[in-house]
Length: 222
Length: 252
Image (cartoon, rainbow over all chains, first blue to last red; front, side):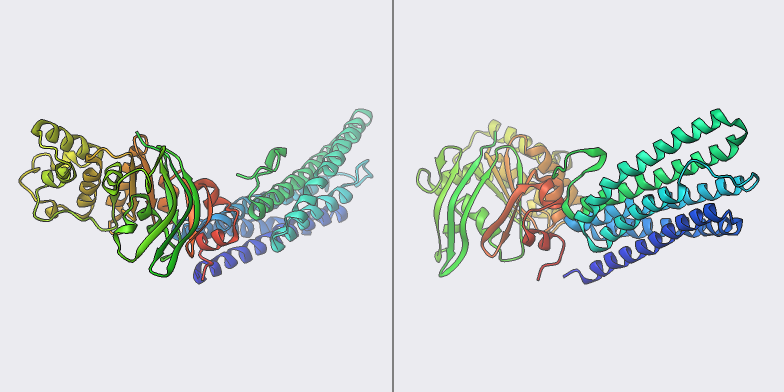
């Protein structure tokens, strides 16, 4: 039994879950900032980013060490590869939170008007995707990961609808262009969060089943 | 050129111990096939059945069919004939210590009655070149004894000796386990090159080595072959839980 190695895999998983918690919190805070237009919450998002970046490097280093020192095989190899990919996706989720906070800060200079887009609903859906994908990772549950993939189309549709309604608003009321553009970018950021959740779910499927389902390819066993 | 090996219902015993149980396997020609498994699982016994060395032990016996190409080696060929067609390399290099490098390489040929000096010279050069040893020993062929070479060189000399009789199959029982990493990589490079001309079966405890050199891998456990598949499949996504437990170290 490779006790030390398997303990290290558990440590790696635990560290990735810390990273996941931080990325999730950053997204939640950025949406809370949008909802309340509270710039102090934006600050919390900015301040957390270096910690997320640092953790990303630490997790990569742990994974690299395990690959080099332990030469993992089969499910262990797939697990470590998945962790490396999920780690990158979580860091990008953190980046999207920062992007949203930047937009909220810019919106603070303009009147808080009602826009024809339901950002909190889109945020709730994309955050739910991230949460489900991470739950699938925690429980090694490929079926739960499958269900995340199905949600991505809904997020895309909401983002498309936001694009249509906000670009129409810009045409009709050019004076609302700054607010509309910022909301448009936030919608796009949240759509990207959904994409990262999809990637995480695909990585869970790869780890558990050994099947590569990226880019809508058929679930093929290598 | 190499030849495919078809194994059907192979069973082997040492005394009353049933060491191989109902092995069915096709080893494709001109490929390297790795056999992995814990100590005592039967993989070395299996390769010894492929050149009829198993039966040299008085308490050992084997039943079943082993076809080398079209020839059933237990019914249609003598052990001597088979061992000429099937070269074998062991865990530890086993040079004839009192012989020169030259005589070590041609010892199998001489045993088969070859005496033509020109052919012997050509064979020594060809075999040592195939074993990637020629450049290192060409000036000392008759001056140095085989035992004076380094461990890695001795092992490559033993490979040259096995190749000198122009076999179709090369069996390697942990050929690099006693060697340092540099010598090991030379042996692995060699296996990679030789498989275009020979069918290679390699027993190894080093799973990374199996992954590096072999197209197909078989996992043996308690005398049975649990799984046989492409090396890629075995090491990334094996079908059988026992294979996965073994290669990920969750075994035992």
